[in-house]
Amino acid sequence: MLKKYFFLPLIFFSFLGKAQNIKTVQLRPINSNSFSAIVPLGSILELSFDDLDADNKEYQYRVQHMTYDWKPSNLTSNQYINGFAENYINDVTNSFNTLQDYTHYSVQIPNENTIITKSGNYLISVLNYNNEVVFTRRCVFYEDLTMVGVAAFRSRFIKTINEQQTVQFSINYPELQINNPAQEIKVVLFQNNNWNTAITNIQPQFFRPQQLIYNYTQTTNFWGGNEFLNFDNKTIRNTNLNIAKTEREEVYHNYLYTNEPRANKPYSYNPDINGEFIVRTLDANDKTTEADYATIHFSLDSHKPYLNKEVYVYGAFNNFELSEENKMTYNKKDKIYKAAVSLKQGFYNYCFATVDRDRNVNLNEVDGSFYETENEYTVIVYYHPFGEIYDRVVGVGNGFFNQNR
Image 1 (cartoon, rainbow, N blue to C red):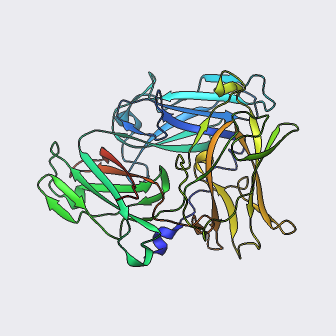
Image 2: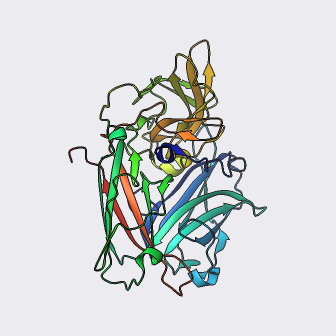
Image 3: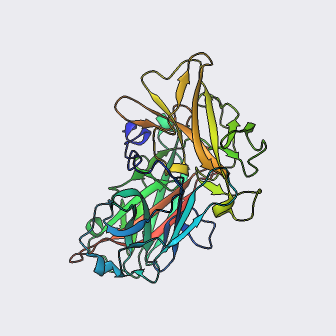
């Protein structure tokens, strides 16, 4: 039972071979400080990314409607889009006055050529000139037809009371006619905007008039994890928050202070942004094309290597994926794991993940798991009544763990 939530399946290794020069992919609401690509139907998301080849390629985007479990839905594109499901990305600009040349691409979705008409899960793919998928990102457009209350508590399960958090939630649906909630309603629950943590197939425990209640004490448990580590290189030429040394070569190299494993240390509160990142620079005016790239040198102190396991730097900077670039190597002489990752200037959260021979990911072995950790939880409500051919999203709820509960 516990293993289900301790290990995450390795669904991260996707498209990274073709996307090795693609960096700083962001899919976020315009004019908002939100990191989440879960927005009301009619809202506008901006997809942006940099290509370090800096050669002005012709990229296209593709918008595809998906089922609640991220399989292609039965809808044809003209049933969920007015216009074109595929189109070229035309907003293209070159970097200016940076050591690392790159081309910046951006597109708003929906737009005048691609108007999304149905709620649901959507997969946004970026295609190259050979019509190959370079990378994908998930987003959700929802109808605000339900009220979703979400609360997180310290785990009631004695074996993990100091390490886990329990999420409970309810769905109120005064505007919907739901005849068979167990069949027509599906929910997805996940932590910190990380789809890899999602729990599905959760049935309501209690049924009340126009209300579903999910008050589980173990099924909806999450490992609390630890507060994310961070660094800030908005001034790329100098040392800054958690940056010990800076060198200029072909590009700038920022060396972070060596981290120590935190699994066996007491919990210590440290404000974070739940694994996310923010592009910013004090060295120029336009962060999109004038922020430079630096090689960030991560290091993790370890008296001996983790037996039969690989260690990765982990965070939203690459969509919580695991690739060769963020894989760490062990230096036997220094007794330190090291990794060098090219990142655009800004403020970044990260942690460490281990992967065993069976390709199970453990997010707690290095950093530990504590019930006190501040986390955000999201519930998405899908509605598929009898006779309908797609999964509508009819509500979204968010809740934060408060250790004072």
